[in-house]
Image (cartoon, rainbow, N blue to C red; front, side, top):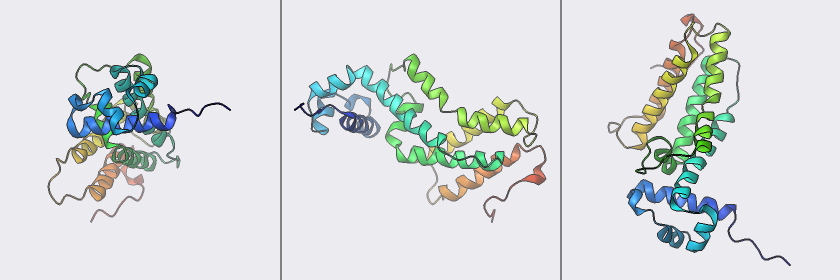
Length: 208
């Protein structure tokens, strides 16, 4: 009878989540393989077996963050209306960030001094923007969006959601500010602003 595997995917994900939590709450210096192993109830041998080294562990954190992020964005169904699709994708962006806030900073702020993702990790990160790029490209090609370079709309839309989500995660929003309602209104306003004919704006949230 074969011996059960102890260094499996469940342990790998547990270690990655705990590593992200340590970095997020205590800073990158708090991440040691010995502490990580103790917190996860395993051995340093298991950590080395699964990741190889501390830089490899950080790269795996970066990859896992974008893997989850990309899966959530790719799962957003398309309606065929570019404005609605852009809003739904923006909502999924925030949901993903709130689900894994301990990975978000590693993905976008390079919070680990000296860390540079490898080429495969960078390709994965760029691929997560493909759903956004397709929505924008289709909106411009169909004439629903104005005749603007798709990359302008893509990066501007990304900048809006990333900026708002980053402010929320860092606790930098004013006291009492209702992020869910304001965020949705901002998504509709942004998406509608790119329309060729603003009169075609789909019904968004009540602006009152």
